[in-house]
Image (tube, rainbow, N blue to C red; front, top):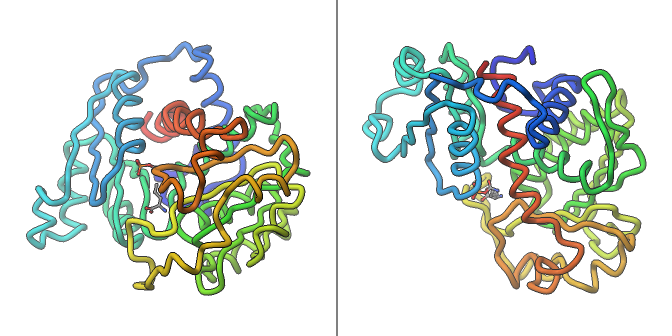
Length: 314
Ligand code: CP
Ligand code: NVA
């Protein structure tokens, strides 16, 4: 991997993504002989927002690879008392070998990375959640038996992914990923809750090279026709994206339920990054049903993020 950091999938070459996916497959199958490549390394975990999966999967992954973690809740850091991100980055670069950060403002993560001499991984901002969707495409490839090697790109053409719900950090990251990997992606959101316009436009432009098909829809029942993957996320994220108010009534037609599923392909898989608000964006019947892969999806955070760290922190 040539990149120093993982802040946005947009910054990665497609080949770097294949490299991560291939390494993740080897780590999951335990065919990778170099198991302790973080031996003696210390990774800082800076979190401004709550987390279950991201924190635990990164921390467990780092420990499994022989490294150590220091969990840094920003409420306990001098950042809270006004120390600048630049000074924090410069000081932490003298102690740590890498940083995983979860923040509100995406620009704060960009600044931290640009002022650090060590690699920085974005563990979610209001704008993007890149690790999540790289892990998710790994799960899709597993479930749909699509292979990938360092030299050979996965053949994802013909695969239709439909994201239903708020045009949030997950939707934005999916657009970035689809534009790099040549996927067909429909982002289906209520009017007024569409994904980030600048990211959409940039991805539409980038798609011309990769033959990705990215579109925005407002009609779930039509959008899921022929879908191989239906993906959803909470209607109200932890961040306050653009300061906008979320009215749950606007999302009533956007629930992933059995009726919606019946309009997709018979072997459709249902994904959710979790945490879920059961009974809102997804019903119990669907999330616990035979099409759901959400806990395999959660497990793969561990394997794929280990691969990301192997390529960035080594
Ligand atoms: N999907 C995800 O990032 O979950 P957490 O908020 O629990 O980390
Ligand atoms: N969109 C959600 C994702 C949580 C993993 C949020 O930002 O809260």
